Amino acid sequence: MQILVTGGTGYIGSHTVIELIRYGHTPVIVDNLSNSKITALDGIEKISGVRPEFYELDVCDKAALSQVFKTHDFAACIHFAGLKAVGESVRLPLEYYKNNLLSTITLLECMRENGCKCIIFSSSATVYGDPASLPIKEDFPLSTTNPYGTTKLMIERILRDFQFANKECSVTLLRYFNPIGAHPTGLLGEDPNGIPNNLLPVVMKAAKGELTLNVFGNDYDTPDGTGVRDYIHVCDLAAGHTAALKNAGKPGVFVYNLGTGSGFSVLEIINTFERVNGVKVPYVIADRRPGDIAACYADPSKAERELGFKAVHGIEDMCRDAWNYAKDR
Ligand code: NAD
Ligand code: UD1
Image 1 (cartoon, rainbow, N blue to C red):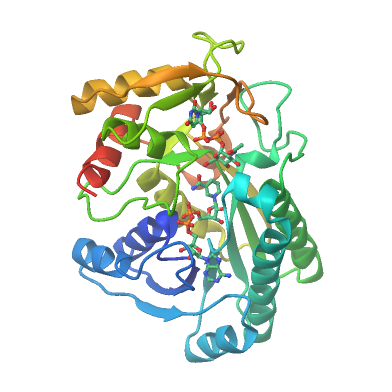
Image 2: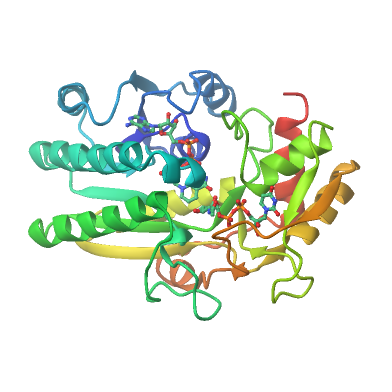
């Protein structure tokens, strides 16, 4: 299948492109390179032996995107393109709403005009807000606490309305938990611009001696008092997308958690990272980060039941592969 991958030079998109090629699909990437580098294509080519077709464009640019649709016959679109930094979204809400909503609406217009009937969307566990119980199932109530999360929830709603009006279409909402790690070859990984906020990138900067990690709170109601999350290897997450293509021909809206179902605390991540990589991660206990929740992990059984998807990489693999990619950068 020819598959349009928006945001395909980014962290999760580039790993998914590898997976698509492995399954015999033909991915075509569009990305404006606002948060990724063209060199991701070199990594993809070295790993897969294929250099996918690439268009540098903004998905909000209808004329440019239409041209790509006229040149190809897409069986499905996987829509990764979007801005994703929570803190930045609080400072720049209009930029987040404009980019994330307009890119999605533009993509849907192009799909409708060109007869493409399947979209897979990168949503987030952030749409569950502070869940009343754990593990989180797909039918839990939805709420958000920041503009980034609200764009995800609004896009989910737009996609549901689009599918209601276009009954032959297949819409899959994938709610990612916490993706970390990198391709085991060390050729692809996460290269965050500026100062990182997410735990693993900060752990790696601390391991390089560039900063001291602040552990945000050790007084949560969790086994060791630090925050618990469901970390998923980015290669597993990528495999979740090829699995989701099973729904491509089925009309409807499908929602899946992509996680492992296991929660790990901040201290467990630090200890595992130190152990598997033989490095020290200097840290101090700091105040809680505003907006954080104590614990968040998925019930991943729906994706396993309906898509046959199950994450296979453990936390050791995630810590090892992340460091293998980042240590010399
Ligand atoms: P990323 O920033 O590495 O990749 C996103 C890509 O989209 C980048 O290459 C960027 O240049 C591109 N892009 C952004 N706006 C664009 C536009 N208007 N037109 C064209 N390209 C555009 O992020 P990622 O971690 O790979 O995340 C991919 C998707 O998954 C995002 O939608 C993100 O919100 C979602 N998500 C990510 C996480 C996470 O922790 N990484 C968790 C949940 C959901
Ligand atoms: C963040 C985003 C969320 C996004 C998710 C997946 C926020 C508020 N939420 O969630 O929208 O979907 O990433 O990528 O940013 N921690 C530290 N010190 C640090 C950094 C993090 O102790 O320097 C702790 C946090 O308190 C948390 C855990 O590590 O307990 C994970 O944090 P992070 O990687 O930022 O992810 P989330 O907060 O789960």
